[in-house]
Image (cartoon, one colour):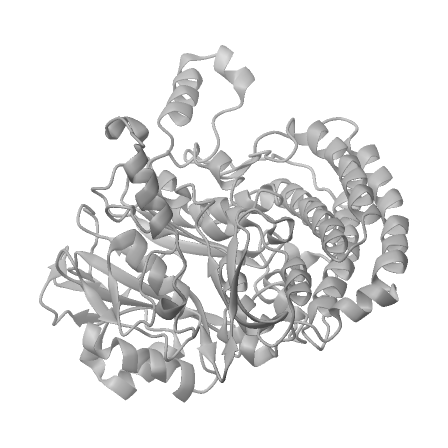
Length: 599
C-alpha cells in the first residue's frame, strides 16, 4: 500500500511504502481522517505516526482515554535534532521532532507519535494535564533541546545547572572537552552559581505561611545517605509532617546520550555500564538488542543463553545491594555487610567469565565478547547452592522483623492506576498487584523457553516493593540453574559482517581477517539507516534504548529510557502527609540509582 504525502515537505521523495497492519493505525485514520497522519516504517515495527503540532494533543488524548484497550502509560518522551540528518525517506520535514512513546498493557503494544517542529526555538502544548509523568520529560526536552512546552507549570532546567548556556543535545553543542575553551571559575561566578541554587518556594507553588502556620523548608541532600547518590530533596514541613517535596536532580549527569552520538557503535558499550552502575550487563542488553534490530543480526542460541544467565546473575547482585542498603536505611546495620559479602561470591563468577567486576562491558553486537571459560559450571553451581539459604535467613531477620514491618507496611502506597499514570515499571509496578514483566509479555533472548514465576504483591507499599524483589532473586536463581543445565553448544557470536570483530587468533593467519578486525575495532560497523528501540526487564524496571542510524559508524540519536527517572518523580505523591522518617523508607524501597536517573 502507498499513500501520497500531503504535508509541506517530504524528505526523500513524495511516496513511500506503509505497513498499515496495526489495528490502531486504521482506527486513528477512521477517527481523524486519512490525511491526518504520515506513517513511518521502523526496524522495530512499532506503529510510528507523524501528526501535526495542532492535532498532537487531541491524538494523544484519544489514545489514552477514548480507544478500547487504551495506551495508558506515557512510556517515554524525547526529541530529535533533525537538522543534519541525511537519510529520512518518507518523513515530513522538520528541524526538530518530539517523540511520544505510549504503551498499552491491554494490547501489549506500543505506539510512537512524532510531531515535526520548525525553527530555532520551537514549542508545542504541554501534555502535563493528560499525563502527570510528562512533567519531568518535558523539562528534559526543554533542557536538552530548547523545545518549549507551552503551559508547563515549571518549565526550567532539570539535568543541567540553571546557569547553563545552550541545549546539550542539539547538534551544534560541543560533545568533547577539546571543542571548548579553558574553564575558569572566578569568585563572582561562584557567587552567581550559589545564588542560582537557592530554593524559592513561591516558584514551585508553595506557601511559606498558611492558616497561622509557618512552614519550614529543609534540604535533604544532596549529600545524605538516604538519597543513595547525589540527590537534593527540598521538603516543605509542618513539624515532622511532609506537606510537599521538590526533587532536584542532575548532579550526576554525565552526558550519556551525547556520548552515545559521538562513540562508534561498539565503543559505546562500556559507557552503558555506567547508567545503572549496579546492574552490569543488564545495561548492555537493551543497547545491543536495539543495534541488532537495526542491523538485522540474528544471535546464536549459545550467546542467547549466556546473556540470560549473566543478566539474571546481575539482577541478583543488584537486588542484594538494594536489600542491604534498604535494611540499613531502616536502622539495621548487619544486613548490608551480609549483602556485600554475598555479592563477592557473585563477583567470583563474573571475574572468571568477564575479567571485570562491576562494569564488564561484556555483551557485544551479535553475541558476547568471549566463550565461557573452563570451570564456569562449578562456580555457578556453588553459587546456586549457597544463596538460597542466605535469602531465607535475610527474610527472617529483616522482612519478618516487627520494627521493619511497622516502618514500611502502609507507607508510600500507590495503586496500579497511579503507578501507570507515573510511568512506574518493574518490581515497583508488580508490587501494586499488576503482573507485567517484559521477560514474559515480550520474551527476548529465548526467555520464553525458561520456567519462572512473576512475583507480585497487592498493597503497593514500601514493604511489598521489598517482598517482590526478594522473591525475584529466587526466581532468577531458577533461571540461572536452567542455563547451567541446558547450555547449548555452538558459537558465542553471530557470523555477520556487522557483529563483533573476527576471532583474534585468526588475525595472525591472513591479512584480510587482520584488516577486518582493525576496522571493526577502530571505526566500528556501519549500521544501516533506520530507527529501532528495544526494552528489557532490567533490575529496577524497564530500560529501553531508542537508536537512530543515519547509515554511519556512530549513532545519530541515542535515547536511553531508564526506570529510575519516572520512579523518582512519584516520590512527592508517595510522601505527602507522612513524616521525614517515612520518606527515607520510601526512597529505600524504590531502589533507584542516580546514574540511572541523570544519565
